[in-house]
Amino acid sequence: MAFRVLAVFAVVMLGCSSSSGRTAGEACQQQSDCEASLDCLDIGQFAGTTCTVVGKICSVTCTSASDPSCTMLGSGYTCLAGCGSDPMVCAATAP
Image (cartoon, rainbow, N blue to C red; front, side, top):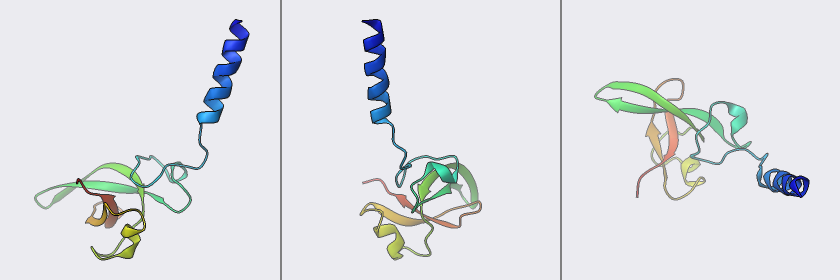
């Protein structure tokens, strides 16, 4: 009986795993964490003129608020100023 429970657990865990990568807006640590069309980019927080990288998300770079790259990620995404190696990043904004 214990073997059957373990076997069912293993099948469920394998069925729930995803090899496709993380989607837009999800936290990442490296490029391979993200879906193929996304990059693992720095997200910054500003305090006056000082910018501090506070994490990384799967997203795309952009050039302006009207950049169509952000709208392809969803209606809640906009181009935000960043810091670090990624000057502008598409990120979700609060509703």
